[in-house]
Image 1 (cartoon, rainbow, N blue to C red):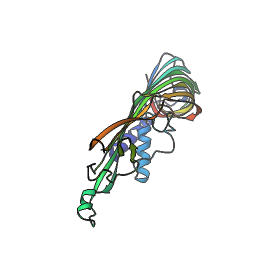
Image 2 (image 1 turned 90 degrees about the horizontal axis):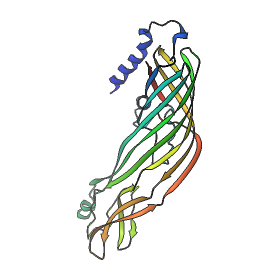
Image 3 (image 1 turned 90 degrees about the vertical axis):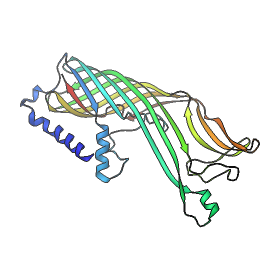
Image 4 (image 1 turned 30 degrees about the horizontal axis):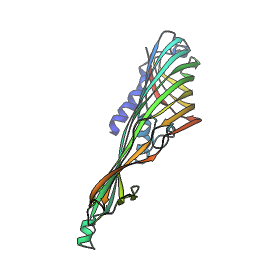
Length: 293
């Protein structure tokens, strides 16, 4: 994986050497031109991981904070941008972001069956918590550019809409039986008393519909032109947004002492909610590369 990153990095750094322009006034778009851009946030994360060998690190804080609550990580994994220049320094801009992530958190717990047969047993089984996120975002607005040299400032504003869903599923190594009605499980899962199931554990949490967000976003950043028609840049945002979420449910399994069998039950764990926030953060392609044509 590292060799592919270094090849990409060398390719980007080689662009200025291939360019023939020598006059800084030649850099940047003109009226009627278009631009296509892609986020480089995944590369920022990869560089951060290379620096210390971890798997959940980013280069600085370029990816910003999530606009959705913690259950709805809203920053896109990947986004694309498009621009159309009304004048040399004014452009219409649009951004589409995509959210696809899956995290499988596994934990060892005691193997209850082996322990009951031999109290000295060190056998273990695995409990899993799988968190899946799906969603997207769309923003459209205007931007104003400052300067005509290699380094140009960007000030913009956009209307933004986003949606996201988060589902958690649990898998357990120890089965529920009539003899072991509350087997050993790993946190964050825990047992809850639900009617005729004294010890019910979660198997899934979900919402009936996505969480939604809408608002306005101000953008402030800069671009550095590697050559006349290619640039890299970064932006930070100030946003005013409103979020609304649907009810959240949990599905449980447990031993039903009345029916004398393993049963399931679905329960509401949180009601509909709304949130309005004015803050700074990052939306869409914060660290990006643009191509002009």
